[in-house]
Image 1: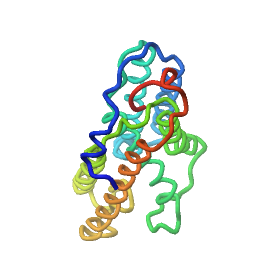
Image 2 (image 1 turned 30 degrees about the vertical axis):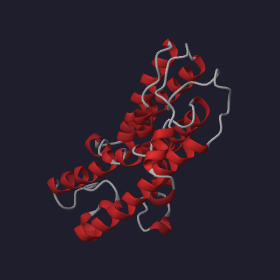
Image 3 (image 1 turned 90 degrees about the vertical axis):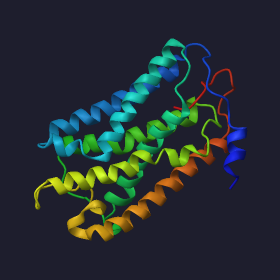
Image 4 (image 1 turned 60 degrees about the vertical axis):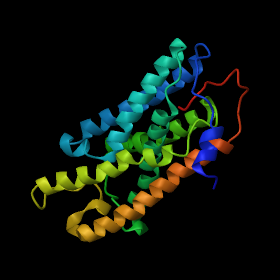
Length: 238
């Protein structure tokens, strides 16, 4: 792996406006709408909005909807693209949402599965929030952005939110009565099941996995090819 200074020195300059980008704007608006639709469907299906909005899935999709709507507006009006520090964070968080859901929470062999019967409405919401929005974010990054915008230092900076989610989940759980349904949002954060020592171990494992994922995004961003000529691509991250 190249040292931080090398990547930082070779990184692309700050994004600049190159006129209106209607295709990118339309795609991002659709992605934002997808996230909002999933959240609305999940809210309708939920009997406990407070519990629903404690999930990382919902929070990361809210962030994605805001960032993509903002990016769509800037692309439509021909304004400078958002900072890749911001858009890369949204990309990482929604990738975490999709990967953890499909490989951990929906995997009976993971030891942390949350498989249960879902209504058709809940199933539709889950597919939008765990599958459609992560794929849209990755596709936007690959197709509509210029490589080389992510700096190596972004990888650890992006972890501020996932790591701050831990005390949020633990404090919320501590304030709820034992036995409360959904006291802890995810099995790997359930103190009743694993104790604080177990939660500490899980935090280290997941934290390292998230950092590796962040590093992978940074490095892939530097080696991925241009899919279009520079005149037809937008600058910056999704």
